[in-house]
Image 1 (cartoon, rainbow, N blue to C red):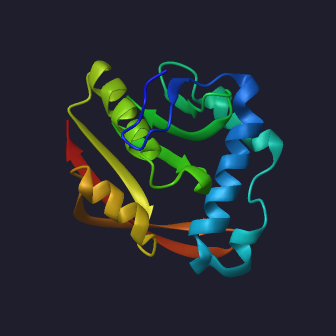
Image 2: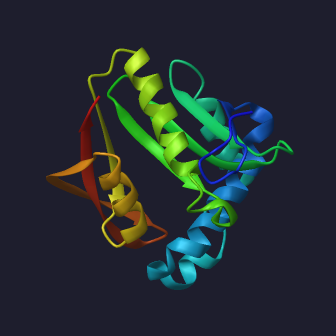
Length: 167
């Protein structure tokens, strides 16, 4: 199992259907911790267990869904990507492992998978209020391209910036 610069041992592997509940738990914990700008909306689970099952199923190859597991096999982060268009779709790390290199390792693995699938560039959307995510992506070489979209989170519109990186 690779040792992160922080001393944390992490294994990056493809997700399986069995991982869906843990992926949902990581999302819920990360959102509760980092998306405080959403107020009460971030404090409750946004998606059902069936939604997480569907996410895993929808990210079967050729799509990419990778999980980061600690030395006990516990899922501590995940990322998803779509090689058909180079989109990095999701990247979440449990707050207990934030700042330890897990997210960067997942990001590197997703970029490697996109490259291997023939993508020349990667792009992603992130909430413009999510300063931590913006800092992580910018440190990894992603840059705003000037476009944005508005997503609906339980009736609350959230502006998301598009960031791109040449692979």
